[in-house]
Amino acid sequence: MVERKRDPDLVTVAVDLNVKQLAVITVRQHSQVIRTRFVSDHGLDQARFGHLKRIAKKQWQSGKPVTGERSNQQLWAHIRRQNLDTAHKTARAIVAVCERYPGCVLLFERLRKIKAKGGSKSKRRNRKQANQLRGKINQLAREKAYAAGVVSVEVNPHGTSQYCARCGCRGVRFTYQAGQRVPGTGGKLFFCPACRYECHADFNASVNVHHSFFREFHWQPRQHKRLHALSG
Ligand SMILES: [Zn+2]
Image (tube, rainbow, N blue to C red; front, side, top):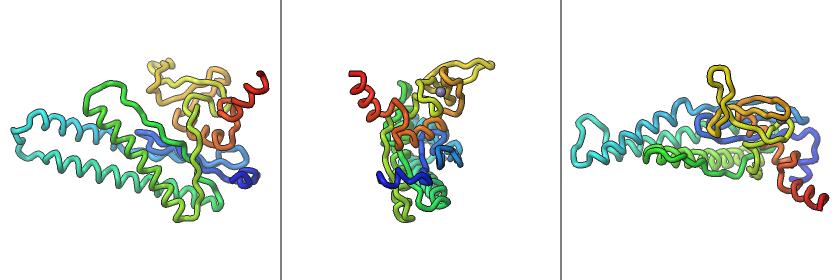
């Protein structure tokens, strides 16, 4: 891998896995992003939340079956089936991008759990399902990549969502409300106060996965240590 990293023509395909944008795939060669693909969940997260709310409601009303409604077992089976189908489709989309660039390396972040901020039992359950889906996409994409002869590498996720993919400074997540940037951790957009770069937050994270692989920015642990050693 060290030798491949030194190949100046090496193509890297980075994947950032999220909830509504299931995968943001960026392809990089010669330090340039040459292709981007967003794989949306097509409303899966929202629909699943609806199913989980129905399950919770029926558990609360237990003993009083509602006519014409599917049982909770059927709903759970439906949720699992949909998650698995979506994981296969997303994994296929990732590997299809890799297949366009023979000899490329597929990059994933080591997965972190996306925490649900409080909320109802259904919301927490939905977040858990979303995390399981991300894990499944990661696993299936690696398996399919391996079968297609594509090498995959897991990179350190440190900093990929907080720092600017252009200049490496710490940025903020925000949303637009009435034309104003409103900062918030749930914001879908990213803004860097240092270089004024603004983009989709998941795209920024995906580009940072390449930086993490090549250890290009100061927020990367190994270089960080080196900087400390130099100053100390
Ligand atoms: Zn910047």
